[in-house]
Image 1: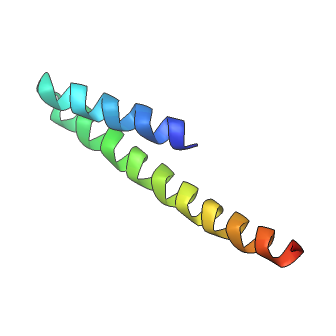
Image 2 (image 1 turned 90 degrees about the vertical axis):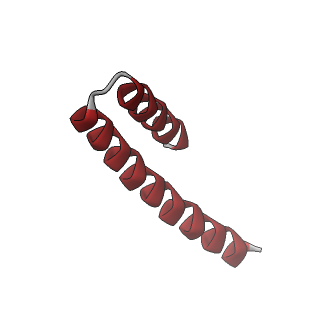
Image 3 (image 1 turned 90 degrees about the horizontal axis):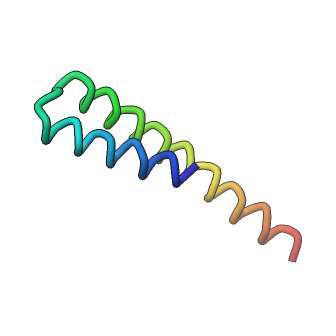
Length: 53
């Protein structure tokens, strides 16, 4: 999931360079959402891993 976030960030940067403002904003918002989902899942997996030890 982190790979998809990086892909959308790169897509947003390239779109911004070429002047596609709407596409850049859309890709950046998707990247932001995916990053927060990744972060939540990462924290949950950390806590679940510590309970087993």
